[in-house]
Length: 447
Image 1: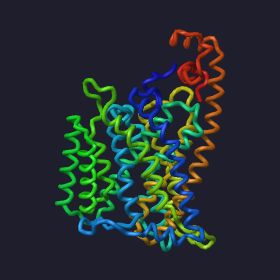
Image 2: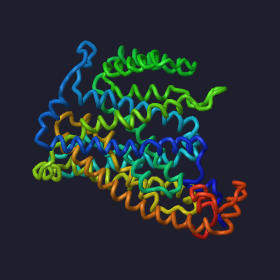
Image 3: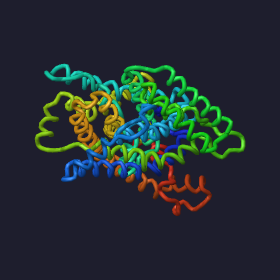
């Protein structure tokens, strides 16, 4: 007897999550390519005859000293531009919590537990690797815990045309929860001294920002200065300034008011995502990924327990933690995978989650503050490439499987009848993307 579809993992999505997924897939592919371009330029520039110019530009300082904002170009990219990235993350979180997959405990539990597993196991493997070796350091335990949404979703968009939308949404929601946990880690473990007067000033700016957003008073000349002030005060407080970006995104209304076609959070996410994915994150990568690569530096990184821990955590710890946590949820709730899905799909997504990059590079710089940063960056870059390659290979294999199922179903009488009834048109003129997913049609192809 078939299980109730409500008791299956990765089944149908909420309408809000479908829209959110469509928005992200439209922009993250291009954003991921720009992020890759920024990384390549940084690596080529830092290893060229003009490497001195790269270092001079990255280390050039400017800004008002009185406001504690006399920062290097690299720090402006890390603390300033990434605040835009985290603002978009905050908007995503608000939408998912209010109207998406995180709204209902029954659907939220899987990506939440998977995200926790995908952070705990890499951190544990990192600590184990460093404790068991001379010269190890547990300071970088948080580096392999992060997932880069832009890169992971971009790879999925390239290789996963025929994959079920629920699987895509699982990766998105898992990465969003992962970012939330990474934000908490940054706020709790990388704040040495808090100046509460500046923190209160930042909180007041964020509260006023949220009040104006709820009242739909959205003049740019009013909200942007408030956002910048909240960021500057947060920076002065000693708490990492990107936290202000998340907080600003979280106070934006995620439900449409009467007469509105789209909620303000959805509208602003649509507006700011191109700036985040197309400008802020690639420029951050340009100034964060520029490390010198040589036979000597590769040998040094390969023998460094810190770099080893980061690599093992991202490439092995991420998929192991995600798959293990998802399996535990499935076992406890007695919920099987949705019809047609395979655990190979979950493993492939788990490897994509091992693409750390943006947040991993940020945490690496915060963890070591100059010492061993080059080895950490090299490990993050190499691990992200390896994890992306393995994940892409697995999902391309599964994608061909789903394509074959679609093509088989598109010619069957049963599917044609369903499509004709649903669309009121001749089924043979319907694109395969519009056909019911194979998992919704028959049980005999269950894997």
